Image 1 (cartoon, rainbow, N blue to C red):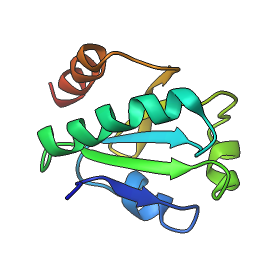
Image 2: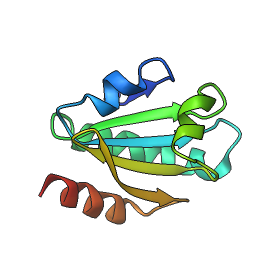
Image 3: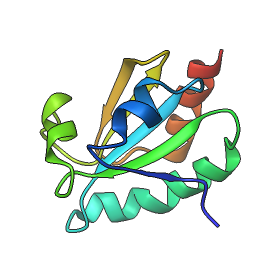
Image 4: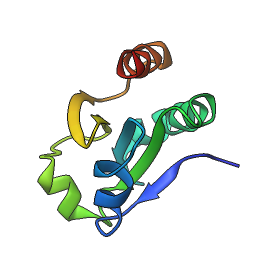
Length: 108
């Protein structure tokens, strides 16, 4: 079972901006090759950081308003939020070690 939370335009504010935990949001689409490659890493992180960081995925095709609001022009785009504010953006395929480093920084 995955600990990932599936976001939509409708639940983005509640799940991300009002979250007590830091949040990683993976903006992706099913047709995106690099998105498919990073997907399993995101799922691993969701399990490793369960209870510490909320790991979310949002399909940009199904939730274009959120993608537009955060000016997502390339996917995968990973946005990190803390206390309801965006604190970092990573674009493109990222190694797991880099993702863990950024999540650990978020928790520090």
